[in-house]
Amino acid sequence: MFTTTEHKAIVRLLAAGKPVWYVAAVTKSHAHDVYAVGVSYGYPDRTRLRQAVAVLTGFGPDAA
Image (cartoon, rainbow, N blue to C red; front, side, top):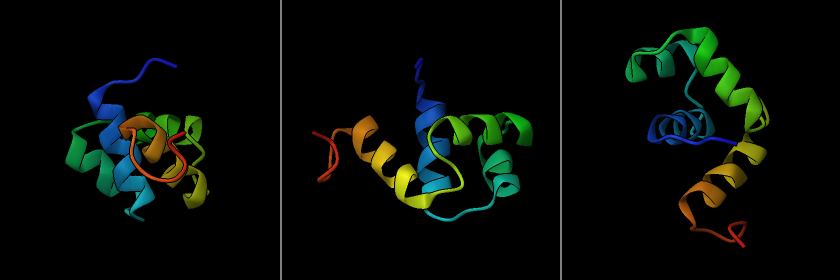
């Protein structure tokens, strides 16, 4: 999947429990786009989002 720094920010915020509308406002995106990116990384399952953050950043136990 093509990843941008914006995707990483979206996934981090969603994994932290922020609502889609908040993430959309912070990243200056449309809520639909935020939701689509989140779903591609496992949203609404926060465990899968945290694993995706670990893989995207290269840190954490799930990064390997």
